[in-house]
Amino acid sequence: MRIQLINPPHTAIGSRVPREHLPPLGLLAIGGPLLDDGHEVRLLDAEFGPLPIAEIVRQTLDFGPDAVLLGHSGSTSAHTTIAQITRELKAVMPHVKIVYGGVFPTYHWRDILASEPQIDAIVRGEGEETARRVMAALETGESLDAIAGVAFLKENVPFATPPAPTIRCLDDYRVGWELIDFARYSYWGDRRAVVVQFSRGCPHLCNYCGQRGFWTQWRHRDPVKFAAELASLAREHGVEVVNFADENPSSNKRVWREFLEALIAENVNLTIVGSTRADDIVRDADILHLYKKAGVARWLMGMESYDEATLLKIRKGGTPLKDREAIRLLRAHDILSMATWVVGFEEETDRDYWHGLKQLLHYDPDQIQVMYVTPHRWTPFFREAKDRQVIQLDQRKWDYKHQVLSTRHMAPWRVLLWVKFIECVIQLRPKSLARLFHHDRPIRACIRWYYRVALGVLKFEIGNFLRRDKHTPNGPTLAEFWGEPQDAEENALRLVSKRRGEIPLAPVR
Image 1 (cartoon, rainbow, N blue to C red):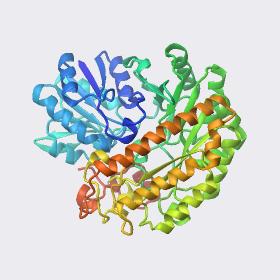
Image 2 (image 1 turned 30 degrees about the horizontal axis):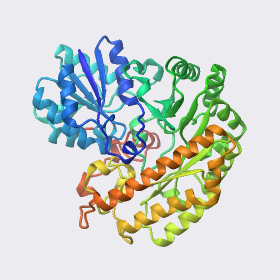
Image 3 (image 1 turned 180 degrees about the horizontal axis):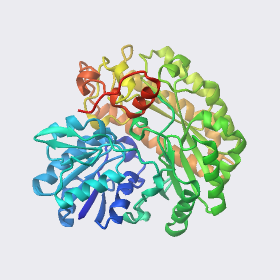
């Protein structure tokens, strides 16, 4: 079959400001197995430009595919664009098969199939094996009923097969790197870059996380083989920066150390960035020198809140003490720390923001990213927030950088002022500005690049708020906007609950 993979143009602030792009790892992970099955596969990355929808349709027509597969890492905010692309594709190519995958369609398959009948199938959960089976069935004209992890219209009614089994060995499916031109992708200041995944899943149960249930269980690549793959990307394709997409790559200290040692042995000059947990950094105090030697330059750590009661409520599992210690340890090893701070879990007041700022100053992170809580229907947090008012009805702006829920005590403009004030205080205080002259040259370059991007984001967010963002003063409740909670279908919670005997498993209908 001729298969076109489409990475849609994304409207998120992070996609538009840096003018740098990273490869769409999810589509490449699907593409590798499809190439190995003998299909002719092409990737259309519409983030470049970004391409208008008419041009996406034109290029797809020129290729003449039998099937089009779409997905995006920011699947909630990308859905509106994907729906429009698929409508226009089906109008001019009525016989093409359209398959849609990602986190958002995995859970919202009922709504999507009911409103977007042009979509022939939705891949629910991990896609490597399921996509192979779907393509084989479409090629031979067989029914999709026997394929686990698929949703489609059956007699004009949305229907889903049972969930597909979790992929146990991640090394069984290769990434289709040959689908991209490496020279087009960069990060960290126009340095050639890729996105990779050492592990999937997370052993922690933060109740707002939209990823953990999708991946279900923490698993990892073979550390030695993975290090060899990164080394090959550096040597054969000139890759300089590796961005880890993992939720928690260092969950297992023994396995993580084995990877670090294997990458050091490969003797390649790579810059590694990604995210992990502060308690893992504290746990690994004795091997942080290996992090640095392997090329780790920055870790993003979700700290979410200064309030211990809030951290307990959202099941973060961390403590302010460990957060501060993790930042101190990273700095001692010349590794940058980026703290993410999420507002909107509670109905904050001026006093809460002031205390949050003081706590962040006490943490003293190198970089800061303040985000707005964005509820997903399949998470436990959604159930807690289902009666809160939605003020942002444009789904394309559900990207963590736009306010989507009202705050009872503060107008949206005041929340924005506090968020921007906190970011500016953290980044413009003398201690932070002094790091622009860091003694480590690569780190110094990174810090200066980050300031350029942060300034662009600041201008973009404020401009958007003043000119484009439309907040609905009397919007619907969250449950009215999205529907009833789906946390009983959230796989990680269901697995834990089954073991503990806490709640019954809900069948998929």
